[in-house]
Amino acid sequence: MTRSPLLVVMPMLLLASCGPKTESLGKVTGAPPSLMLSTRLLTAEGNSLGEVELLQFADGVQLIARIKGLPAGSYAMHLHAVGRCVAPDFASAGPHFNPEGRQHGRDNPMGAHAGDLPNLTVDADGNGALDVRVAGLRLKDGAAPLLDADGAAVVLHGKPDDYRSDPAGNAGARIGCGELRAN
Image 1 (cartoon, rainbow, N blue to C red):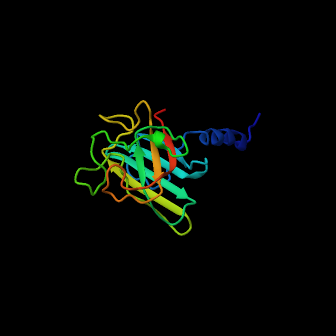
Image 2: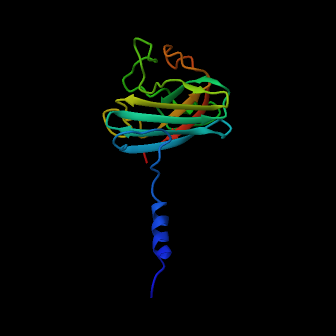
Image 3: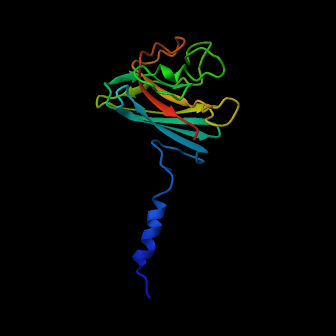
């Protein structure tokens, strides 16, 4: 009995499409990441603001965020110490990830927290993006991994970070939150 080439190729194509997610939201160059996590940022009402991806490399963690549906402007984004996003205020995410006990902000002589990130800019169409490599940050290994027993969270704030004021850069209310878990 002769098999059609299509009958041989189709099952292989189906199996290839069932693998883990390997595409990134941003441009990743060099060696592949050793760990890749993603989360949806949700509002207090449960609406999606977009997706955030974290990729662990030998030298740190790359954070890639794609946001939609916000008014034009700058917004603070931080990594928080607890992986719980309970509405309406997301206070459950705890403080910024800060294993070294520093003060907040890249412009603060006593800073910065390990969870401090640059501001995200949203354009006139309501779209924003952030693609940053945080040197030395570890997700699951190292002396102070972000993903401990209670996880971590990515939090979007309603105002820009002033990069100086402790503890949160005068960034305003927490308007979006996404939980990060090790498993």
